[in-house]
Image (cartoon, rainbow, N blue to C red; front, top):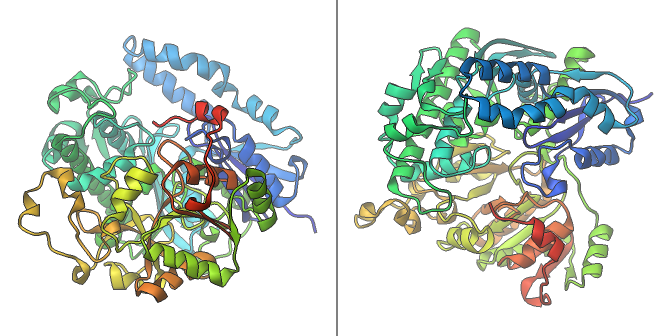
Length: 609
């Protein structure tokens, strides 16, 4: 019996991706940036598509249906109407965006046909928030659930809500442009000196250093929040309708000065702004969830859209919200739209039934990218002239656990690459959470990034409630919870007087490397059935130290996508102060390697943001 293949695509805005289903099951999914090495790559996902086809062993001629994650003509209608509504103020912006739309985005159908080669079937288009909602509900472990999607903007919608049941998904209401929680957060991202569409998580990480002193000002002047979670933004203070910046002179006047220049020193003001917009965002997320629960009476909630990556807000939803259970799409941003539209084609267009296993989603741990076998890895190592050892599995686990216990930093490249923005134990850099020096070492010597940024713990699922105020799964690192009270170390009186980032080096718990300054942590629970190698490594570390937790950060440096290939991993290893590198069954020690010579062509392309 022939298989039914469906390809989902997202492209042309940011973070393009491809996803392939076989008979409704996810075979492969990946972002283009991982292959092209251009962070947030928005181009047609040619390399990601080639990988998906290769993983399935097929060509485009075998694909039955192709779906695209949004409707470009509707989006163009919104952009055109916006420019006309604010004319002539938006003319400069239109001069920049207009030619690109006319040349490329208005002719998405033609561009897709050209890129897809042998494919002669239908091109199916879903609305942006339908794709988000489908990516949230269909892979979830729930037969029935409320669904909430929140981001910057799709075609017209900036948030949408509805209900999924079986293979049916209906969105019943939406918030529309220009009122957008994602864009409100991005405005503060811009104003505090970070890059929009990639720096929002920096604002979230900075927030605990500040006080929410601007919350009242935000509610008085910027946001009119209603009881049902809907709101309107006062466009007097924003520049995204008619300009090339997120905020404007009125915003500057309201908050006492111009935006922080990128890469300049952070002040208490930026910390307080970050805390304030984070509080407002959480308020709105909770209001939306409570309204949706009141409307549906359901116990389960599925989330997607860029704002669903706000794991601090997700943690509050879980603790304080009305829903008993949450499930958040790990590729919650635009990349996940490729998965969502493929699911819509399978369940809505082809009307195929949905099989649900209670307590188990169909994302396969988000391990949906390429893997490399021992022969491929060893061929690369020999070609490179690297010094390495091949170890059996049991020996590898013990050796790496010993290195971690000795405060060594280990690059861990093993199995299929993750889909979504988080490294989940296949493309990770690991450290000892008990070390008070680990956070600073990783930030400065490995990641080359801001010192205030927190690191996440990976914890064995059965031990999560021993360390954190949480007793549910968090396999995708999308929930923040407090470190357990008995593990916390109260701040000494002298430390309470420290300013902002000076508090960073104060030890707050018996796992200080992953304890943020507000005693919180962004948690990944690890189960043996989804990633046995990673689970057994953490188990070996526990057997050696008594601690079932490791520090897990993504295997990349600032400005670079997460590593995809053994070559990417080796390059990152040699360019940083990572002590050891695991490539499948091979262990490499930094001290044993020869002199590293940077490849000049690569060096020209690589830039820190």
